[in-house]
Amino acid sequence: VNPGFSGQGFIPEVYEKLEKADKYRQENSLNYEIMIDGGVNRDNAEKLVSAGADILVSGSSFFQSSEFQELIRQLKR
Image 1: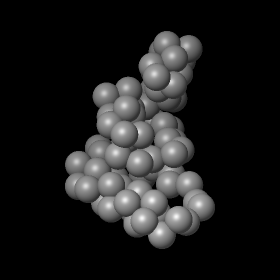
Image 2 (image 1 turned 30 degrees about the vertical axis):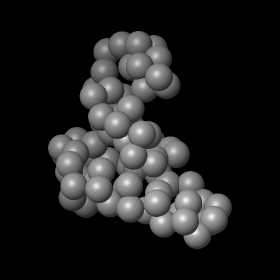
Image 3 (image 1 turned 90 degrees about the vertical axis):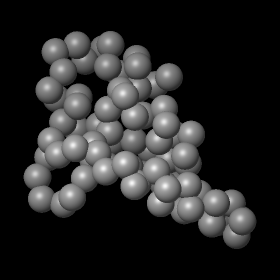
Image 4 (image 1 turned 90 degrees about the horizontal axis):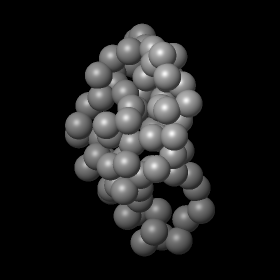
């Protein structure tokens, strides 16, 4: 998301940046975690992890959900 306030939409170009960051980390044997904070939801969580994310922050998606347990279960997949 663009910085500013919560609830903004996810920016799809992040996938390519994430893949590049993960590739750089692997090629250089670096030891750090990649966190994505902003626009994370049940629809993109799996793709973000596949692209290299280690930690996902799902603020608005979580707090706007009426079914917390189900959302957590889906995000853990």
